[in-house]
Length: 251
Ligand code: PEP
Figure 1 (tube, rainbow, N blue to C red):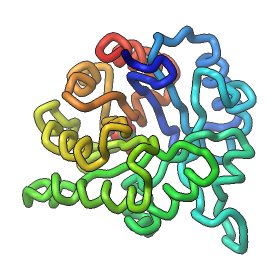
Figure 2 (cartoon, rainbow, N blue to C red; figure 1 turned 180 degrees about the vertical axis):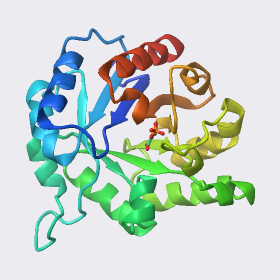
Figure 3 (tube, rainbow, N blue to C red; figure 1 turned 90 degrees about the vertical axis):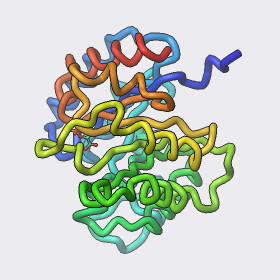
Figure 4 (cartoon, helix red, strand yellow; figure 1 turned 60 degrees about the vertical axis):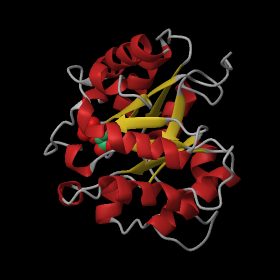
């Protein structure tokens, strides 16, 4: 029998670098009015400026998890411009996104730093959400499975196999406005590899140009237990519609 405290499906969004405080509050208030399907765990990841405002409306322990888009691996210190895990936790975050491809591409996020951040999150009881994925060139070269498996291995180095960590497969070629949406058959092998390397305690989410048109197919891929969404969930109606699709397919 499954444990009712362990979610059977996940739906989440990162707002990236969008939304004013007023927009963030309006979205959070709409989420606070939703009756979520049993077993479905929704999460929302505002920019750092809005974590506290969103968590006031969606407090820790409630049905919607609030996250942070990044945090430093040190707890405090002379790191101008950075925020730490204790700080985002203090603001109300209970989930930490780590290793998004935009951070890997533009901000020097290495596998080693991803691993340090996973340990920092776990030290403070914050759930890590590790993003992995190959770029178009790596896919064309046939090295997607190998590359993504090594990203997962590096992220989880030194983490006990029973410790829950969320893994998000986000192929770089599928993400963002210039991305090409993946078909379910495009992701089957890499998802299977992530599930194998990650182990049974680790839900695997899929992200990259998820929309109302392709969500049902993507959530039906064996091993995918949630969707992680950018643009299609930046309006709350998109988020709730995608949540319903995930709930119907997997709870
Ligand atoms: C992302 O960047 O993690 C993402 C999933 O974005 P989008 O859905 O907009 O492709």
